[in-house]
Image 1: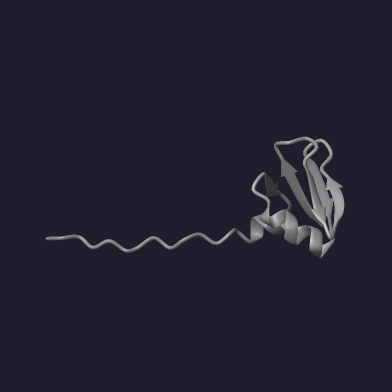
Image 2: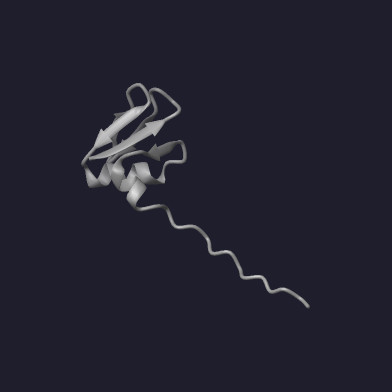
Length: 68
């Protein structure tokens, strides 16, 4: 089960033309289409155990060399 939190208590979003709403800033789903949409929303954070096990990819920092 995917669990999401938003700073907005009643954030709403659409999946396949149907309205979905957060309640009290939380939303739970097992629907892969909803998960795909929620993962792309800027005001939403996934808080379940799977999200912690799979951190979002970050950009690699370029290596710096020391000058002598």
